[in-house]
Image (cartoon, rainbow, N blue to C red; front, top):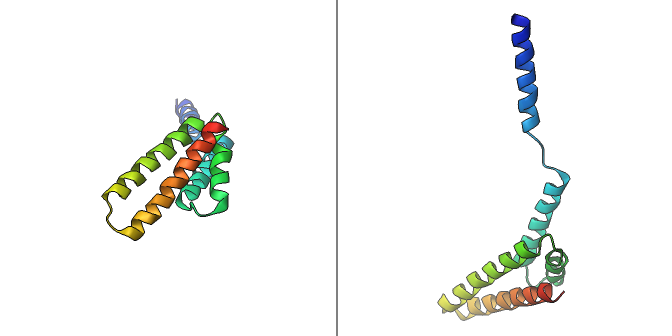
Length: 110
C-alpha cells in the first residue's frame, strides 16, 4: 500500500512538473517581436522604427495584431492632440500621429 502511494505521488508530481512548461521558441519570438514593435512606436524619429514595424507588420501571422495596435495608438495620439493646448506637445503628437499613419499605410500596401 505504501509503495503504491509513493508511486502515485511520484507520477502526480511528474505530471504537475510537466504542466509548468517554459516558453517555447515561438512564444519567445513573439515576445521579442512585441518588444521591438513597442520600441519602434515609442521612437518615431529613429529611421529603423518604420522598418521594424513594416518587417513584422507585413508578416501575415501578425498583421492583424500590429495593424490593430497601430490604429489604437493613433486613436490615442489623436485624442491627446485634440485635448492639448500646448503647442510644443501638439507638435510632438503630430509627428507621432504622422509616423503611425505612415506605418499603417506601409503595412497595408505591402
